[in-house]
Amino acid sequence: MKQYPEVTVGALIVDENGEILLIRSHKWSNKYVVPGGHIEIGETIEETLKREVKEETNLDIEVGEFLGVQESIFDETFWKKERHFIFLDFVCRLKRKNEIKLNYEAQEYIWIKPEKALEIDVEPYTKKAIERYIEVRDRK
Image (cartoon, rainbow, N blue to C red; front, side, top):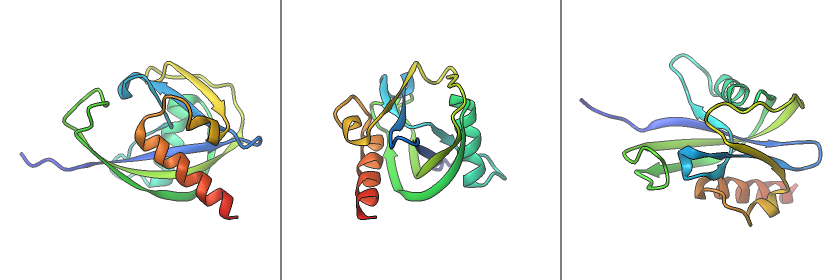
């Protein structure tokens, strides 16, 4: 049976104070990540971002600019080793700041300035997305 890479989305959520939301996930060796997940058949990228963020955090978002594509092939830090992911990362803004309610995928969350986030235990793909966000933000 032929297997293919899994296409996923990541939401780098920025609040009104310029802080980003990170969640600590057991799926990524208890490192901090951005909310996100798999695109389902028949679902748009924007619909996936909104659904995944709502499921994982209870937040409502508006999807903003595209940050970039990343690829993870059999990464040892992911809990299921034999996975090939294609990550589509987007900057997102809060529609309203609901109370955060984490699902089973996350153990805790923090709001943090992007530069400070680079100093904590974030997984490598999240780190690259944050670096890209800072680069794009500072060009404006």
